[in-house]
Length: 137
Image 1 (cartoon, rainbow, N blue to C red):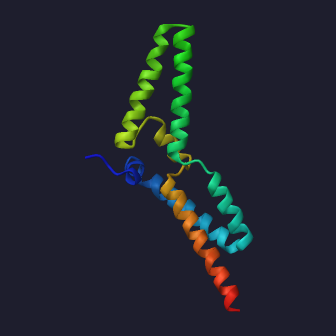
Image 2 (spheres, rainbow, N blue to C red):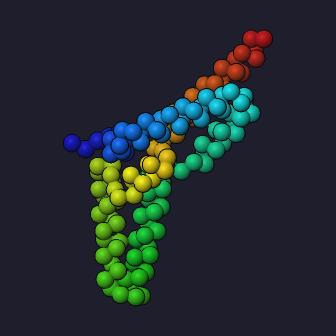
């Protein structure tokens, strides 16, 4: 069975790595909320710039495919195997949620869009709660 888009990367990531990412996200939320509204707005801007795992994998794969294609065209035709292998791994990632760089990137803390959005939504709620509290005062 093909996992959903939201679930495929976490399903292909070791449980302890998913837990580490969750703990880091929770710590970031708590630290930012303690720092106040200005820090929350700053962190929200940072989250808007954060690259999720999909964007990073797409960039990595397209760069390697371009380099492999150039090497195949200008150095040795055997280099055309590089883009073919990378394209196969990219297809595997699209279907199953796994490809060779995934475990390394996840261990480095690269998050899914859903994980980033979880932090974003928690901070937005805190900011809104702060605004509502000021209005009531």
